[in-house]
Amino acid sequence: MKRVLLYLLFSLTFVVGCADIDYTEQSVNRPSLKILVDASHDGGVWWAPQSGTYSASLPHQGKLMADFLRDYGFTVDELPSFSVVTDSILQQYDKVIRAGNYGNYQSSELQAYVNYTRRPSSLFLIGEYLHPAQIDELAESLGINFRGTYYGNLDLYSPHMITESATSFYYNAGSIVVNAGTNPSIVPLGWLDGDNNKLAMGILQHPFSKIFFMGDINGIENLPQPLTIKIFKWLFE
Image 1 (cartoon, rainbow, N blue to C red):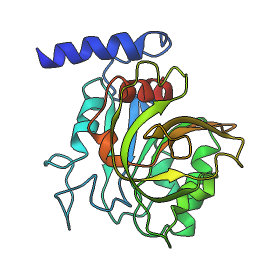
Image 2 (image 1 turned 90 degrees about the vertical axis):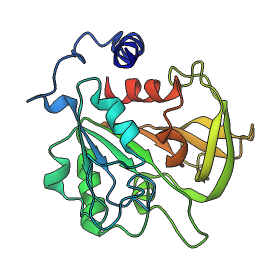
Image 3 (image 1 turned 180 degrees about the vertical axis):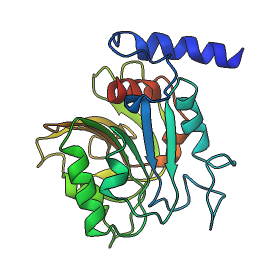
Image 4 (image 1 turned 60 degrees about the vertical axis):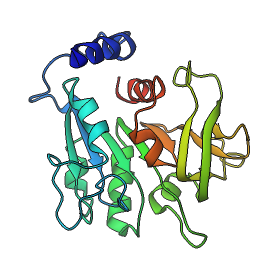
C-alpha cells in the first residue's frame, strides 16, 4: 500500500508534463533512467554508519533517497567513498547527484565533471559544511562558492516551480553560497531563517547542463516534500 501511494504521488507531480519519457517503464537498457550518486567524497553523511567497505544494499543514511528514486524505475548506482571519479564513469550517465563534499578533488576528477556538464546532463550538487580554510573544489570550478557552517531552517523561498508549496525544514550543519551577487548565472531559490544573506539553494544557469545546488545533505536526505520531488522533476524530466 505504501508503495502504491508513493507511486501515485510521484506520478502526479513528476510525470505530468513528461510525456516524452515513460518514468514507469523499467530502466533496464534505458541510460536516460540511470542515476549516479557520486558519494566518493562523502564525509560520513551519505554512507553512515558504513566505513571501510561500502555496500548500497546495506543500511546507510543515503539509502532513503536512493530507494525513493528506485521505486520509480530509475537505476541508481552509488559510488563508494574514496573512489576516483573518471570520464569513463561519468560518460555512462546523464543524471548525477554529487552527495556531499569532503577532502580534495584530483584535477582529473574536476576535468571529468567539466566534460560531463559540456553535454546535455543534470547535476544535483549537494554540499556540506566547510571549515574556514576549506572550499568545495567542484562547486568552485562551476562558479558556486560555498562557505561556512550553518544550522537553521530553510524557510524563505523565491517563486519557482521547484519551490511551489515548499515548507520549512532543518538545515543541519551546511554551507551557504556567498557569491550570488557577483555571479549572474546563479538563480537564488532558498534562504535560511528568513535571511536573504544566507543563500542555501538555487539553480546555476548553464549552457548545456541542468544544475541545482544545495549546501546541506542532512536535511535533503530526509526527503522534505513537496520540495524534494520537485527538485527531481526539474532535474530529471
